[in-house]
Image (cartoon, rainbow, N blue to C red):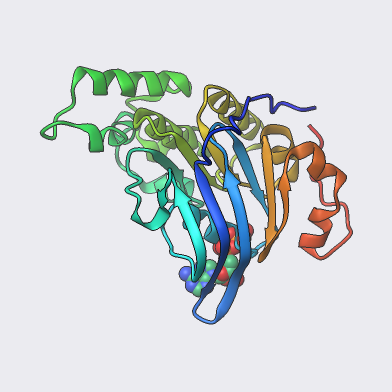
Length: 257
Ligand SMILES: Nc1ncnc2c1ncn2[C@@H]1O[C@H](COP(=O)(O)OP(=O)(O)OP(=O)(O)O)[C@@H](O)[C@H]1O
């Protein structure tokens, strides 16, 4: 089944352009000559084995790290110089776990998405509307006054998405967002991402479950230090890029949607 029906605007400037990037932590090489563009409106699924450099590549894309060689541009500017605050929503790998102890409410977390836009540290009517709209869009209006630490993993991830929507981000980046989330909530979560992408939000998702990316992503990049594949899901399932990147010819597709 192909759910990825979003029109990707390939005539526009790439939102992110990674050009011949090499990166290592000290003398440990992690990425080698990687080039990849992220088009506005696309849903990029980033896959590869454990330790293959996915999170590092995402960090480079978002300007959180600088390449040793090559260049990364983000919204047309050098990524490391870009002030990403308002335009990028980022849900980190351990966000759900870390939020377990959060004593603040859902409403308060989503309001954080408006902090960069507040005037004189105060919320305007527009800020309040954006927060209400974001809560509604991800279906958590009725959880607004609940403490984040008391929610299920799937509910918490929705809270972080709502925070990004409240900030009117153009790009949502998620690093294995559903670790520890039950199967049913995962499906709902990915369909939510799909629906948000259909409204024009660009999504980058690091995900271990190949079935998820082939179902929901419009583009797939498969890496293991080098880029093994960059293209659409239909092409991806036809190639042996996955087996090559994982160094095995075993069938690793986890489930068929
Ligand atoms: N801050 C760091 N300092 C040194 N080495 C690091 C650092 N962060 C990651 N690494 C190493 O770089 C390599 C790539 O890590 P990265 O987290 O980018 O991979 P990944 O594909 O996201 O892995 P996973 O799927 O397991 O999360 C790994 O060998 C990792 O141990």
